[in-house]
Image (cartoon, rainbow, N blue to C red; front, side):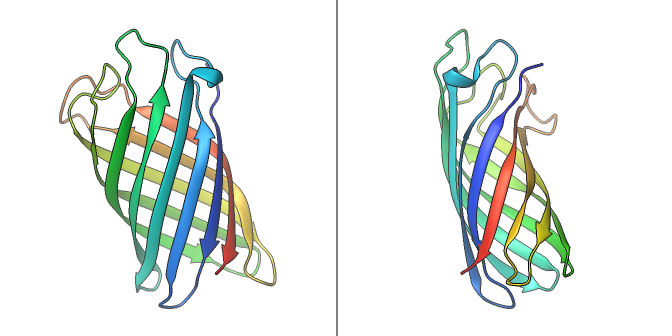
Amino acid sequence: MKYLILILLSTMAYADEIVTDVGLGSFGSKGSSLSQDKFAKVGIEEDIWSPFKQKFNVGGWIDTRGEGYSSSAFGGYQIGFEVSNNVVQGSVWSGPTLMTSPDQALGGVFQMNETIYLGIVDKERNSIGIAYNHFSSAGLEMPNQGRDFIGLSIKCPF
């Protein structure tokens, strides 16, 4: 199994403020090396009703390995649930995503995007932790191999 390296740099606002997040990284999946795949995303996040939030993401990946895999851009919406105290912060996100170029890992333009985050919080509400990001068609279209991203996430009050 190959590993994914993903660095997410985020600015985090609390209460009813808007949050921006930026992610950069690369991943390795079946038959690829980390140098063949690159990933980037930008998002805007806001509170719906504490602890529920919504996020709009756009981004894409470059996949240079060929063999039926392709690069793609994506745009999506996620609803999330976030809990935090003075030490730990965790969140789960899920929502629909549209992509531009289906390939042998992701069949069809409609995908689901799930994200899990777990981090440590300091006194200024900065957070550093691990983020897992998964794209798949949720079995609605084939193939449904999916794409996974795991990496470091840093969040700072805006």
